[in-house]
Length: 103
Length: 166
Image 1: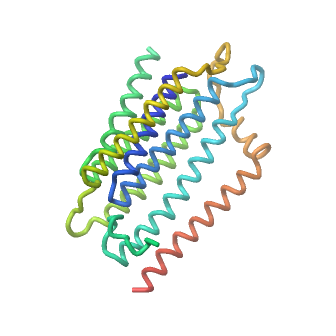
Image 2: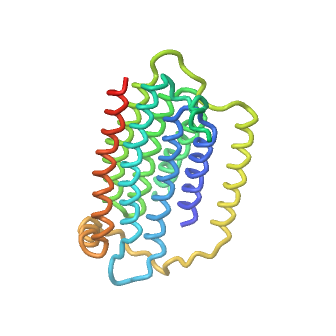
């Protein structure tokens, strides 16, 4: 099991690095996708290896991964709508230019 | 044999992932993300989660990635902007990421996981997942469907308003 967890740690950290260093809003979205994938991989690995029951097939971890995927789909749709609307307003998707949002 | 397949999928997952994080071309990053998502689907298969693997391919690659590539195409007119931040910020980001990565790997390898004493052979999961979704997890399932509907309507509303506002 640790090998799967190490892979998902790598995915998480690369996703986080992407989110931290990208200036392109869509690049940041890709980083978020990587982080969510890492979480889903962790859930499925736990559900495979840490299953307490021997008789029946408990699949709670896989259900959680399904919900993570559904939420990722919703998130990406809304985020792309916001990005496109910002693009049509400001003609850029460089997050360093979105200074109007600063308090 | 299983170890070889596992390693192939791990490489397929991790190497394009570096490209997603470091590439200076957003289109290359998007297509590397495609390979990464395929690799994760393969890892799901190795974990005995056949239904999740297929959902991963359909939703992520068929849906989310196509959306992202559309987003790239619609926002890349004109000059190409620098894709990442400049050096001091980049260095701080790499430092933070490295610290968290080492912490995670130490935590994963040092902790004693209560691993099941024997592993069942992977079985088909679709029927069991269906039963759980319409039984124990009915309310989260319905909430997720309402969330998807709200996201759909919200996305259309946001884009329409900005188009009409011009």
